[in-house]
Image 1: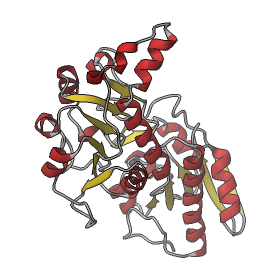
Image 2: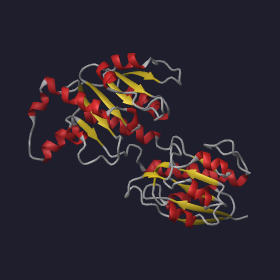
Image 3: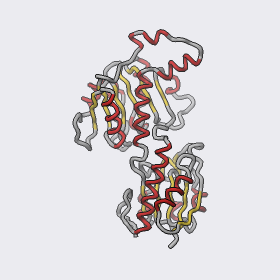
Image 4: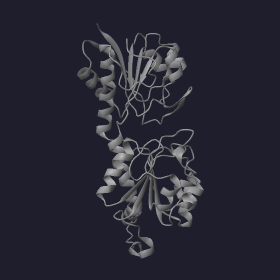
Length: 339
């Protein structure tokens, strides 16, 4: 039996990676169509009723005609797409969560939605550590000065240098796959790690106020939920020791960015490093672009070749389970199962 699959890759999780993984994992004949989405050359956004998707509903509807399985990263699974795709039965999102899929509508339509948990855990953990060190050791600023022909000896003044990781306390807000990896890396630096996560029970777990009070470095690793949105604001930052460092490589919704800018302007925070923002791309007039001692990267903490390859392999493995009639490993609407 031949199964018809749409590989709707982009310029990161490329179609060639998805197709290679499908050929490797899926038994039997596979008829693969291709659609290349514009991300990240064009930013994702809200499409219909879903978030963080490429605005390609029309092209996707056309490509899904007669297709049973779609593997993608950024394609929007909206009510409109579902209504126009009666043959679709499996929609595989090669991301840590299927935010670009309308799960309720998919369930009503009998479409199983899978995702790829842990695909970028290593890359994001490594990037988090790099950002923490960059903010603490003023690496971007000193590089920019040197590249501009300026030798800034004043960076060596006592009041201008940051703390070491060795012997200091790092607080991790969220302790999932990424947070656990960051903790292991930090222990290698000689840091003491504290954890705030109400869903885990591990050594070093404390409540959030204690973590903030004791930590010279704080790194955010929680998911954005109604409970975590805005969880770190002016009061929480004020509770951190003066001269501490704050890192966010998780989600922009967790943090009050005006409060971060205030704390950097006043010197309460020694530095901060951000990979995610409340609005992406950052608006041209944003205060973030003129605040001192802030290191920023454009939402690429999870970007590595291994992340893209793992993403393709994870979704292809669930396609293989679907073809064999086995339970799906990473189904976001588990009321539906493979036939």
